[in-house]
Length: 243
Image (tube, rainbow, N blue to C red; front, side, top):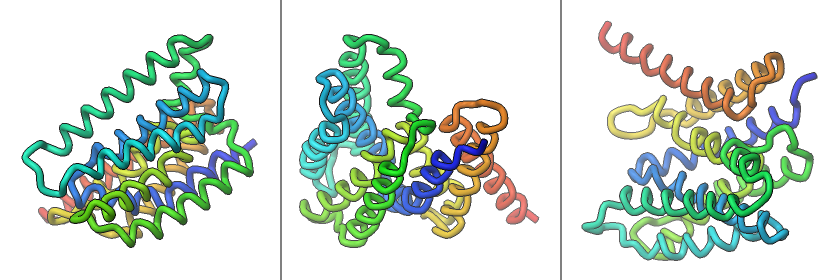
């Protein structure tokens, strides 16, 4: 039986995460994806530990993080990637500490990292669709030179990331944001958005189908195919350029 809901969830995310990732790559703030994803994961962990709503906790904690990150000016002597990498490391550590106090902590940690695609339902699919649409609208309004503009930009990422990590996991969400853009990177910036989305969808379909027939973890399989297709495209372009 084909994992239809898992497949639809991946395809929906593939329609907007590569577009947001394109902005992230062009602004050279790659770690912001992973940092926000991990901050949201901490929110889920706190929600699980307190028997609350993981999505609500994730949204609140991520919103606070956005306000703090946006306070960092566009031009600063402190390396932004280093700051965001530190935020990721801190969030990952706090999340592990929170989950370690819970029964079956190992399973909860794996769920946050690799998602729960097998349990995706109609409500989560609708949430992915709505949050992705909002993220794309907000993305068009961003301006990295002003505080409000940075808040809008990081909020657009959070709208896409927070609901997605519950269904797809931190690793797959980060991969869908970054890998397609890297695959079509040309002349110092991200290339065709259509091609990036095509790679994301093709990798998603291939990974879910392989998982369906050989019982591999769906998120992991999709990440493997995304990277495989990205490498194949890069090698093909390099060969064509040399020829």
